[in-house]
Image (cartoon, rainbow, N blue to C red):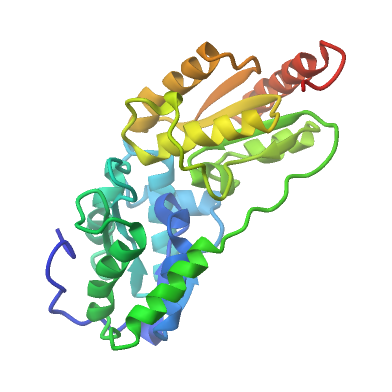
Length: 325
């Protein structure tokens, strides 16, 4: 697989020095790091515009029906970047971000899928696989993974390691916005980062919950490192992160949990019910709602389910005379 071993022999010269980044799937994984790494080497990073129905329509023209909703949208973002004159896109080959864990198989082959659908584009695919790396930490492994990409761009030089160290510090410096204060019912809407942070990919769940008067919190920017019994036997990084994020939000007093999952997502199909079942078995008493999302999700039916769920969460909180301790 490209970038798994020796640096590529070809050289890429992005038009206008611009490198496009599609907003889906791996967009929120290591974004600050890759933005910093490319910018520090003189490239302009062009982020795709927010996801819309038009983005999905463009993706459907290039993608088969059987894949998940976020992958279809990613293809639409790549198409939009190409229309803007961008001829080079960053699509990392993300295999593993931690020892003993893996990412969705679609992440493994994402550069190949994009390259096949868009043969006129240059696809930059840094190979990130910490599990099989000789390195013991992600920061050191990312230098190994990024170097071949910079060589391909003709940008790697004696100052590159220092620039990459700065990019990693920017990644670690991400801060979490404080949750809104108030006595409203608090709902944790947790799932893949793109489901939480992209209103289109999340089919408006967060917006609908807020309109219903709830305070909505998502995954923390930095998920606790300590493993828990909830994730026992789980292998995929997003599921482990989801389990830990839900546990943290419950410990902080969430009154209910909405679990955001996708139709046609293999890891979600086996892990979502396990997470909910284990949390309930361990004593979690708040209501849970698992949503299975795709491009066919009805807004009307969704709002009805969310309204009922918020009412149940509010009754559970206030049934004993007030907010639980």
